[in-house]
Image (cartoon, rainbow over all chains, first blue to last red):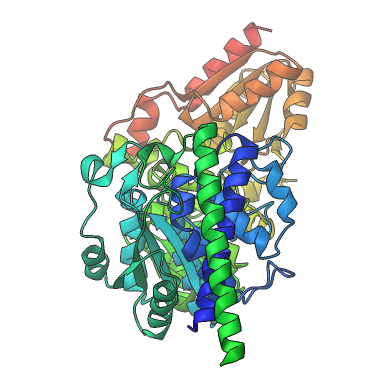
Length: 292
Length: 313
């Protein structure tokens, strides 16, 4: 990945976080922490890797994405809107009674959503079905999924892992958002699922451990997964819950709590400062290329 | 006497018979020779997936297939699809309205000696309370085949209940019998009382009708193979014309056919209802014939309930 592309994706992720926070603020609720921890992964998937067409969201050969941690709609819906699946202005209706943008991710009414999810532990199985369908019917698309690190406490995740390994689904790539926090506290205190990578390997998967906020590392891991034959790949993405601002980072209450005015103010200021810095760096890269 | 055949075998044969459609995929959870998905497996192995003893995953994998435009059939005992898989069916099949057909075999008491853990008497209740589900419970092999075909032609989430025991085939001998999804089948006309039965209880009800007719009581018999959407019209017509209703099901009296019929009557045309079913208790090990007697799922009990309903007019 060249430095301009890298910076573009970082800018996209920064914009996703800002718009997602505006969306939560307008709605009066929403899950910020886990939404922010996956923003960089979403940016790489939807703005670099996935073979999709916003003008034809049901295109049968498209790559699929399942947000198994279905509560992380603030960044997921924002990503789809910014990618052109529906108007960005509609995000202002998020969670409203007359809106099509529900609290948890929903496929029937939201363009670009490939699977509904909410009750944790189910989305990976659904992704297995999509990947198995591609294998059965000779389709080339890749199926991506994101599960939470707390979510993998659900036993069904390991049923899904067993079946994906058994059916050699090398067209399936699962991100585990390893931010270390869940609603009731730290994973290590509630129910520690580690070592996560070794568990997936034991079920017949490749497992990669990366920095989940490094767009280059995310992109490289996807390339490795796609090049691998005969096995699904789990990308254990080490992340920070609430990533992007000191207001939310690694704070357990921002699984689902609504910030105070002061926290909103700090968050927007830091997120916007970061975006300005990234845009300046991008401008420097472009002007450097021109001079070069 | 014609050959006896279970609804699960008839279902499995129909699945294989109509399984040539390339869009059909079939999943099972290590019970292929019990649910009878094995007939399809042997004919179309390339579209058959054994998911192991992991029903929750199987149901959601079926949902994933359905999002790619396939018609996915998934199988296990009723206890392990409708029961264990309830949340998966609710969230990943019914809520997104996917074209998945969930089959629950060995439903009710007649799984027999395996006992209460495997005797699902709650599946009709669980499935019919999920918005958008179609719930089907055929009464014999002939109807199971017709119901399968109707389910295949219908696009949307369905639950299909089958039983373990070999049963007489009765519907093919009834003049004017026809099957339409969502419409109760009138098996016998009558004016004093109406018996509305589903599944195995239909043929037990037929025997009860013979007894009642000998005693000079005119009985109407409705085979309610589709529990949802429920045929309100045929129920209300029966209530108005016969004034007394008996329901009969191999299921808990709470939440199943009896409840569904009562809901329709209570909201539209109150009439006396007597219910034949399992009286909110778990089953036990035993031969299926013994169990039906022990829990009151008999022609004699239907006769008794018919008289009681008439007396309450």
